Length: 356
Image (cartoon, rainbow, N blue to C red; front, side, top):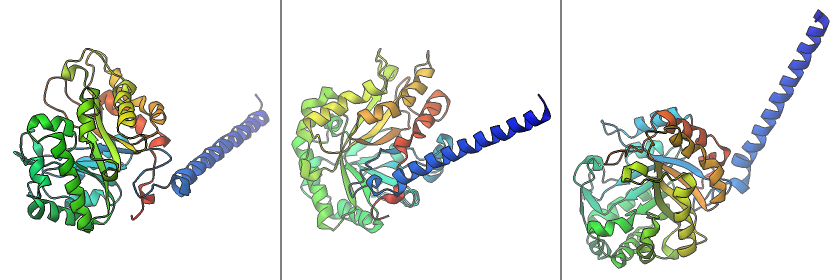
């Protein structure tokens, strides 16, 4: 090759490269317009993002009771900021667990949505360390027994926060009955009472999420637990691929783990309400670790076929039992989750949320 030909080829390669960069930049610009600047993609007052879904997670406190440090560390691992941070509270009134909108939550809420789950229990140990608790009882909540001591003060804290938050009262109520919380009818009365109390106090920045397990084995029970369309803004479900964690011999990929609950709720509870996958995760397969990665990388392909699922919230905490490490802090699970979270479907702009 002569020098002239080499130089000509170099110019050709440069032109092609510049054209490619231009095309890429144009593509990014188009997506940015659709996802960030186009009103068609702006979330509504119920926090529904029409052009995709929120990407969130529950991250436990660290040993020093910091929530910000573990969330920031998790975000660094996954290469993006979470849209939504999910936290859990009891009704103890303690600064550790019983106060809604802690300083750490407020800090995280500057650039993220918050989802608050409020349990009508008092946890035996800080941050629900060993999953032990005392039930306050749905009939007592409904009767107003805890209005002035618990519900009103926390409702006013939410009101003072001002920004819109997702809020769930006693998530997975279908599994709380056997723990002594009360009957389905008492739950409905308690849920309605809590929402009515918030509204009486002028708390208008709450988006109400009714959360059940989504396990179709509890179908009849879940029907009895529904507070009604006037009291529910979103429907949440918590479905997993537990695999060996619960001694299940069958591996359920992401689609098979989520679709049955999603379809049942849409058919039997509401076809119109947005759905939140308020907890999801997979246990690992120790013999085939790549399965955990593939479970997550499949999410962007499945998500558009679950069009009412508008928020995906990963549960990043181990639960009791062998094989029950549901975290994705390292290895194939982290790799798969990181890949899934880069998909444009999960690139909604929190800054477009009304009232922020």
